[in-house]
Length: 217
Image (tube, rainbow, N blue to C red; front, top):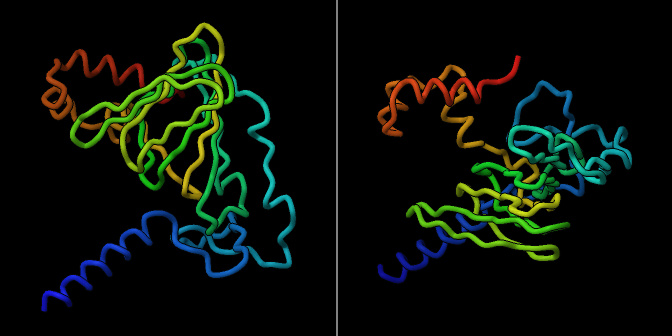
């Protein structure tokens, strides 16, 4: 009985680790048909006769993004929506550009672990564990840092020069949930009485934050 229980635990452990990221592919390629109305866990495959090299190519990360916004940063994603050939391959990239003082605000990727490689400058990076412990470090050009899947994390350029980084994910479509926007700018909005109690502030403060984060018309 004890031996059987050990085998069962091992099987469950291996099964969980096997499905920790996107499912394995079952064919050479499955280029995403982004126009299909059929919804699956991923995208349906385009007809092989219509596949060409452009399905596996994207030049959107070659140039810096405009950082003249509230946060002073811009994320340019190279996921399955930009590169249909990534469908079922379980990887994607993003480029993040930061103005001096720019912040990629606290957010999570519910479907992927992330590893960041600094292209230029240096950035402060950090993530927060479920025990509310902050793991943080300043990294510079050529260095890397890992953000575990699903944990809240951020990057900030504390320097006086622009910075840039490449982020790699073990998912074709990692998803991003900005913490502040999710809490204060959802549709419909989270009730004020929930937010005032959760953040221990008054209604005026909540409404002020909501007004600043509201989507621009």
